Amino acid sequence: MREPALSDEILLNIEKPARYLGNEVNMVRKDPASVDIRFAMCFPDVYEIGMSHLGIQILYDMLNKREDTYCERVYSPWPDLHQIMKERQIPLFTLETQSPVRDMDFLGITIQYEMCYTNILQVLDLSRIPLQAKERTWEDPIVIGGGPCSYNPEPLAEFFDLFYIGEGETRYEDLLTLYKACRKADAAREEFLRKAAGIPGIYVPSLYEVSYHADGVIASFCPRFEDVPSRVEKEIVMDLGDTPYPTKPLVPFIKVTQDRVTLEIMRGCIRGCRFCQAGMLYRPTRERSLDQLKAWAHEMLKNTGHEEITLSSLSSSDYNRLKELVTFLIEEFRGKGVNISLPSLRIDAFSLDVMGQVQDVRKSSLTFAPEAGSQRLRDVINKGLTETDILEGAGAAFEGGWQKVKLYFMLGLPTENAEDISEIAHLAERIAERYYEIPKEERNGKCQITISTSFFVPKPFTPFQWAPMNRREEFKEKARQVKEDVKAQKNHKSLKYNWHEEDVTILEGVFARGDRRVAKALLRAYELGCMFDSWSEFFDNEKWLQAFADTGVSMDFYNHRERALDEILPWDFIDCGVSREFLEREWQRAREGTVTLNCRQKCSGCGAMRYQGGVCVEGKN
Image 1 (cartoon, rainbow, N blue to C red):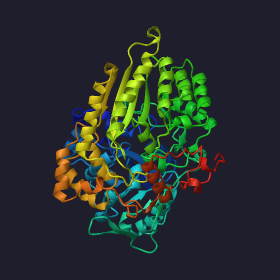
Image 2 (image 1 turned 180 degrees about the vertical axis):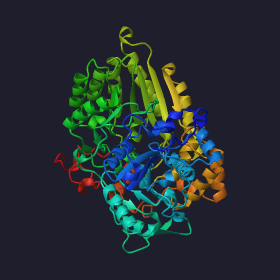
Image 3 (image 1 turned 30 degrees about the vertical axis):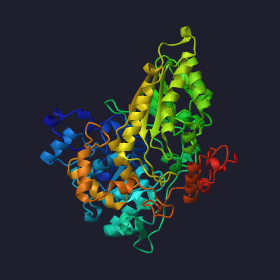
Image 4 (image 1 turned 135 degrees about the horizontal axis):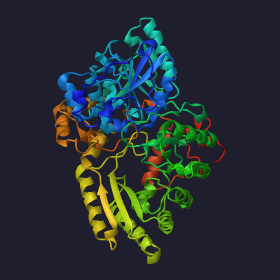
């Protein structure tokens, strides 16, 4: 094990030095000299965020099970340490062995959110890895990206050697085996990348070329060689019972965002909300077995010392054996100081009954996500939630002892009008009225309803991928309207309103649907000092505007025009499991305000039926 990469003098002068020391509970220790492959797994954000990400914990556990591989970790240094590392020319290092990242064979970067893109450049820069993939040699690691943003990898294409499209449990074995063979044969780096492109789910940007029409839209997107696939199909695990899972997850020494045991109960979602990228990408729904989850709960609590279990999924209410699982956890850990967290629940009688068993109702708040104020707009987005559902759910919650409710909405949804916006405050008022219908002596004090609005960003592989996005001024005006409407309600003292920053949303939209040309603006923004753009204290919109102006890249081109259905989109070469025909059909149904039933009610013919074992082939339709 090497000496610490940072001196005591540096550690004493930065915030939270434990971010950079490693040696956490359950950290894997290997002799780097005894392995063939060294893999640095990176989350391009601060340690506390990255350590809370289940995907990295899964891959860390899986890769370290290979005797020939040592997977280590690296996170984005906070700006205080970033400055010191630049000034003193300290290379970015892994936590496990304090080794320079550039000494690794692979640098795997999970890309969860568009606003972390400058942090990716920070990691490469501090690691002294050439930012442009075309400038790298075997002296540099293979830089591989994965995660939800890799479903449109084009804005980052010139910075990555390859991307892994889909769930990580299936193809790393093939990729690492190929790497070993190529290095043993003294093959050129380009030869390895060419062969890697033949592995399902692997996309190598340098092996494709793009041309554009005079109006800026893509004219063609083609592989440069005949043996390179024209389409890359996502990788997916159908049997979750046969996949690795970190039953000895890393336990940090400092407080992180998710400081608890995470049980992933299912993948996918049956609901089909038209704005939701995850609901499309992770189809079909796949559930973990109850017995497996029971065993993991015991093992992970024993191995971590955590005092809370959270059940993770996109829609936990839809897990078929949720009540059995929760009942088991309550009975098994009664009196042992173990709390149970249940995010991603729909607010209905079943979910409230489950939550009522595990929460201290006088202290907790409930979260509803109507997404739109009016029923018309909820039908447009296929939310599958009526006002009756919302009011009955709220009423049952209030009668069960809850008094705090959080309501989440989006502004700028396709077809939205002024009446839809006004209905946000009106719906919140009706929920408050429902609370005050309860006799005073039976209430738990004053009702508190927090309304939060975010601004809608169209995402790839959703029915709204063709939709125009609102302009900055439109977003600001809509938020102002909601604020005024909330003030005008009779129970306005029970209502509180928060909204997101519109400038960050505009930038997110550019990178969500951008192509290779926006990389110039991204690189320029990093050169101007942009980093940690998802953190309001560091986001600098003026620098971003300067970056786009300096590089001549139009933000309006990517955000504010409706795409034609026959336009080649930057991500069209990826097969995400749902068909383009289905997305086009849902885009049309959205404009008609027509609801599509969820997968358990009726098959919508999305294309995911090709994956055997998902909900669509269980004979329930």
